[in-house]
Image (cartoon, rainbow, N blue to C red):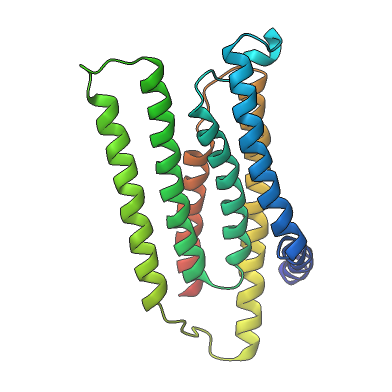
Length: 223
């Protein structure tokens, strides 16, 4: 039963991986991010001048720096999907990608703080500035650490034979497929909370907790 699950999940994962790694997909993602950034700026400017319908204006910010936060949000989604697909190839590369995601989360948070700070400009309150500085500096430090890690990392085979290696790869693909499903379900759940219930959501922070538990599970499987 478990072997059949491994086989089916591996086939589905391989198909999705092949589609995600195609050159056309990378071009589409890059074009989408550029278009989204420009669309965000235009929408924010229109909303700032009260030119959007009321039901749409509720979801569009009025600070132009929020456009950076928006495009960073979608960039994070792309990075997380890439990390999930990398997991089946290399655990160390997936781990490095997780730290890159963490740096992007901190950068996104710093831009979010900056947009709030500009909207409520009060130079006597240095707390928002400290948050912006600490998030940005932490993101830079993590990014530099990842760069060093990628240069010194060495791949080591932990299985005793080819049969074990194939099974190990299939298990990683199964975990990656489960993570992909969790990512999609959580995405729809948080989208419902934000757009329908109008709640504040912390999607990336919550999903990062899933990554931590997955890392621990992979370590246990590797042992």
